[in-house]
Each structure stands twice: as structure tokens, then as C-alpha cells.
Length: 60
Image (cartoon, rainbow, N blue to C red; front, side, top):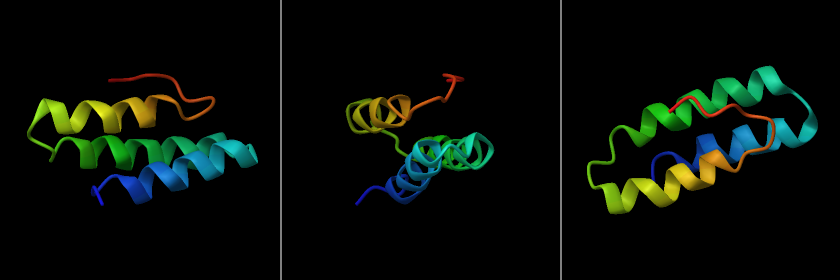
């Protein structure tokens, strides 16, 4: 499991529940965890998952 998966899951759950503030908080945590993934081919699919979280602006 990648380090950002739990954060992405929490962000998605909050977004679906309509809590945009908490969704953004967990999205930011996921993005911070993504920075630790050194290989682009490993990081890009995870960022694509984060990008698909509903109602989250893309800031990366």
C-alpha cells in the first residue's frame, strides 16, 4: 500500500459526505505523501486517483 492511500480514502469519503473542508485537508495530506514517492511512474497513478476526488480543485 502506498503511503498516500489512507489520506486519499479519507479525502474521498469526506468529499462524498459533502464536507469540503475536511476533504481538502486530507487531499493536502495525500499530496504531501505523494512527494515522498520518487519515481514518476509510481507517483502519477496515485496523483490521478487524488485528482478524481469530487469537488477538489487541482493545486498540483
